[in-house]
Image (cartoon, rainbow over the protein chains, first blue to last red):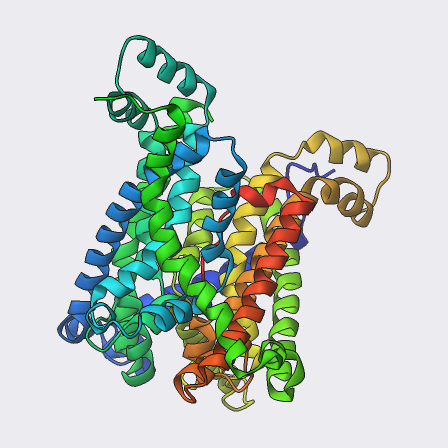
Length: 265
Length: 275
C-alpha cells in the first residue's frame, strides 16, 4: 500500500503539468533570445546579436536599475535599521500605529501610491525629471520589507540581555548600537538588503507612473521592447534581467541556509 | 555629552524613517484622499455609480476570485507533492518554481505572448493538429493564465513549507481506519493547511486586484480596474476620478489583507510583492 510519504499518481501528474506551465515560458524566452530567427526555430542557429542589440539600445536602463537598486538599499539601511530597532523595543500605541502605517504602501496597489506622489510632487520639475523621483517611490515600497526583516531579528531575547550587559559595562548608545546590536543582526540585515535589491530591480507598477523618457529603468525598458521590438529582442532583454537578478537570489538563498545552520531558526 | 533617555533614543532612531514616510507617502496619500471632493462627494463612489467603472470593478473582482481559487487548489496539490516526494533535483525545481516571485508583471505578460500569442507555442500546436492558429494571449484566457502564473509561485512556496510540517502519521492513521482520499483531504489536510490558505489566499487576491504590469503588456480586451485608473489618469487627465478609483481599489486590497490577519496571525509574517 502507498504511504502518505509518497504522493498519489494524480498529484504527481498535476505537479508535472504545473511545472511545465511555469518553466516552459522561461525556457522559451531564454532560447528565443539566443535564436537567429524565432519562427524558424533552432534551424536558424544561435546568436548573441540580439543581446548586443539590447545592450546598445537599452544598456543604460540596466545600469540605471542597478544604480537605483543600490541607492535604494543604502537608503533602506539608513532609514530602516534604526527604525526597526526603535519599533522592536517600543511598546507604545504610537509605535504599533506607525508599524501598521508603514506596511500600507505594500498592501495598497503601487498605482495609487504613484498617483499620490505625482499629485503632490509632480510640479517640482527638478525632482520630477530626475531618478530621485523613481528612487523615492522604490524606497516607500521597499522600506517595510527591511524594517520587518530586521525588526524580527532585533526582537530576539538574547539580544536584549546582550544590550543590557553592554550598557552595564558603560557602553554609550552609539557604541552599543553599532558595536553590539548591528553585528548581532547582520544576517537579517544582509537578507533585507538582498530582498530590497530584487524588489527594486523588478519594480514596475510604481516606476511606470513615475518615470520620464530620460529616467527609464530595466522593467520600463522591457515594457517598451515588448511593445515595439521583435520577439527575439524582447527575449534577449528578459535574459539580461535574469542575469541581473539570479546571482542576488542565489545569494539570498545561500544566506538563508547559512542563517539556519548558525542560528538554528 | 548628555545621555538621552531610552525613549528619546528610540524616537531619534525612528525619526528619519518617520519623516520620510510622512513626507513621501502619508502626505501625498492624504492629498489623494482629498482630491475627489473637489468634484463633489459623489466622485468618491464613482466606481459603484458609473456603469463602465462598475463593470471594470466587477471584471477585476471576478478574475481575481477565480484566479485565487485556482491558485489555492493547484498550489496546495503541488505543495503537498513537493513536500513529500523525494527525487533528484527537488530543491532546484522548488527554487525554479518560486523564481517568478521576483519578476516584474511585464515579463509575465510577455511569457503569455510567447505561450499564446500569434507566434506562440499554443498556436503552433493547434496548427499542427489542424485546428488553425489559436491565439489566446490577448483575451480573458491569456489574462487568467498570466495571473495564475504570477500567483502560483507564492502558493507553491507557502504550501510546500506548510505541508513539510504536517505529520504523515496522522494521514496513515486516517487511511488505516478506512478514510478515502476525499476524507483525508477534508479531515487531515484542511485543518493543517487552513492558516496557509487564508494567508496565501488573501495575498494572492490582493495582488491580483492591484496587478498592473501584466495587464498592461497584454493590452487585453478584458479591462481591469488598474488599467482603467491608468487610462483615466494618462489619456483623459481625469485626476479626481483616477484618485477616487485608486482609493476604492486600495481600500479593497487593504481590507482583504486586514481581514486575513484578523483570521490568522500567519498572514503577518509574509510580505507581498507587486505583480
